[in-house]
Image (cartoon, rainbow, N blue to C red; front, side, top):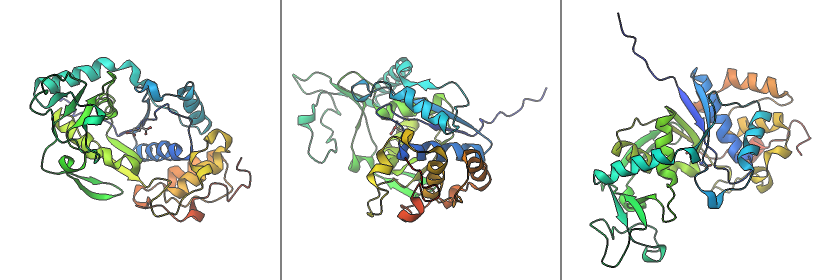
Length: 304
Ligand code: GLU
C-alpha cells in the first residue's frame, strides 16, 4: 500500500494574552492571521496565553472570545489555554538544561546592566553564595537570519541585542518565549502573523526552535498601530475595547490598515466576503498607512 505523504495543513493562530479586552490593535492580529490561514485553505486556531497571572485581568479571556465571536471569528479547534501546559514547558526546559543549551542564573534585576543585554555572568556556573533564580538560554555569537513576509530580510545578533535570555522566570513561571515556541509546535502552527511589536522576539523564538529541533513557521509582521513615524490612529481607536465599536466598520478599518482597500458601507457578512476574495498578504504595508486610510468609522458614522 502506498503511504500518502501527509503535509501539515496551513495553520495560523491568534494568541492573545488575557491582560485586557480585545482592542483595535489585537483585532488586527486576529483578522490578519485568520485571513492569511484561510487564503491558504488552512485552519485558524485561538490560544489564550494565560501564563502570567500577575498581569492577567480577570474575565478578559472570556470577553476576548466573546468579542471574537461578535466578529464571526471562531477557532477551528478547541481554544488552547497555556495555563494547562506547564508540564510541556517544564519538559522542554529540562531538555535544554540537560543538553547544556540553557543554564541556571542567580542574577536579580539589580545585577543586570542598564542596557538590558545579559552580560553572561552565570554562563559558566552560579557565583558563590548565589542561588538559582531564573533559567536562561545561551545565544550564539553569529546572527539569526530570517525572511519576514512583510518586513523583508531580518538579521539579529542576539548576543548584542539581548544576550542569553530568560526561559524560566524568578517567580517560577515559564517565560513567554518558551511557551510560545512550545505551543506553536504543539498546535502545528505553520504561519505566524502578528504585529511588528513582536518582531524583536522572533529571532529569539527561531533560535529556541533550532535548539529544540522544532520546525520554524513562516513569519509576517504588520506595522503596529502606534508607529514611530508619528502617523498614528488615535489613542482611543487603538486601545479602547473593541466591544464598544460596531463590528462591520471596525473590520473594514482593520482591513484598510492592513493595506486591503475594503469599500465602505458593507455589513459584516459582506465585509468578510470581500476580505475572503481580496486578501493579499503582499499588500500589507511595511509601515503604518496614512491615518485617513485607517480610520475605522469613515463609512458608517456610528463608531461608538
Ligand atoms: N500573547 C502575545 C500578546 O498578546 C502574542 C503572542 C504572539 O502572537 O506570538 O501580545
